[in-house]
Length: 114
Length: 116
Image (cartoon, rainbow over all chains, first blue to last red; front, side):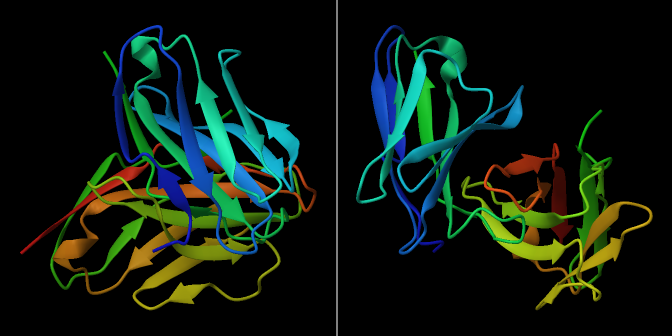
């Protein structure tokens, strides 16, 4: 158990809908990351937050948004969903953001868009 | 250019044998970290081992060791005494720079199958 909690574990929704994925980082970790894993794109970094502030942005679509709350949990909002958004979405956390700090992943949220 | 290259899409090994999974990386940053993660069929991403660019010795964690050759920019994962439960996808990843903007860049992964 990595200590990173993601909900829901599985989600099936229709095209055009909006979903929210939730993440609780490991106790004490200030930095949260979101990654998307799909068969064709592999593991793609979406966005990073550190202590409530956005720190880095990767290949995140405009239809997607995220935030980190004062209690450090984070949410990833996916809207106007398309079939191609079906993927495994990971949340990860680390204590600080130096290169030597391990990033621990949650179990992922499987999203299926039908 | 790809930052992380894993050239072996799949590897087969027999139980109790050792196996090496290859990883090469590309960076001009003197400060970086190299990570290996295991992803079983259930999907979770499990941290295995870490090697810092300034570490003098190769990292080891139980049956996992990292063969770090800095001049060659390679960071191969060695699994000793393979077990059936080691069958999974293995990802090499790199985190560059000491600043607050470093995230993980992953390779495409190597699927390891351990046979009895």
